[in-house]
Figure (cartoon, rainbow, N blue to C red):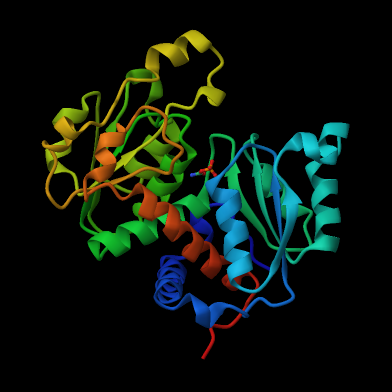
Amino acid sequence: MRHLLNPLDFTVEEIDELLAVADDIEKDPSRYAHVCDGKKLATCFYEPSTRTRLSFESAMLNLGGSVLGFSSADSSSAAKGESIADTIRVISCYADICAMRHPKEGSALVASLHSGIPVINAGDGGHQHPTQTLTDLLTIHSLKGRLDHLTVGLCGDLKFGRTVHSLINALVRYPDVKFVLISPPELRVPEYIREDVLRANHIEFKELGNLDEALPELDILYMTRVQRERFFNEEDYIRLKDCYILTPKKMKLAREDMFVLHPLPRVNEISVEVDKDPRAAYFKQAQYGVYVRMALIMKLLEVKQPC
Ligand code: CP
């Protein structure tokens, strides 16, 4: 039985296969309408979500399966003190596969150790968000035609941004990917990403405070939200929340073939006027999240592609 806790749980070859299935699903979703007939997905979300939970549910329904679950800790027996270990043992009696989001780092790993069904990490605190990464990889591959030879700018909250940590982990495995890490000093990527992922793999990267300086050289700009829920101190959040705002004026500094991604939700960091720019790809990215989660559910349930 396989789980997905970290993007590195899959080899590059497995990710390439998954993206190829997602691509095939996009071309003709109706072929996949019954491949998971009779299967059930549990969505156990202890933290708010729109895209991840609903795209998982949409993905399973598109495959012919059913969904059950909860969307907040308050509406589950976690509110009465039930442990993750006990919860997943019970969910294993009700469903065939589980997508779990939790505010504590390592929660999905704990669940996987006590589970009788595949567990998918749908975000664990400020740690990892591997299915967002699969979505990002599919989006980049579809837009640029490759995952190698890219200069990727990551901008905003690089400290708490689990989507950033997962994406860096995944992209360092492709040749000649360079990173420009754009953040205020307080929100730099964690040291383990800088040392154990980037420097240890001899990846070219630089850290900047200024978005304008970075824009002209980027193939991809990955914007992120400053996450109020991860701050201990409201004053720090207020001081940092609007440190980067992407506007049409700034977009003039970028190349014509640069694309803007954002895992969403957006607050102020991309002005709504940028949505009209053909290089704004974040809503398309949200759509790709359904296709890649369909492919992932099939892989973990060992469901064959339709003939
Ligand atoms: N990108 C993402 O994880 O969005 P949600 O928090 O809405 O699931």
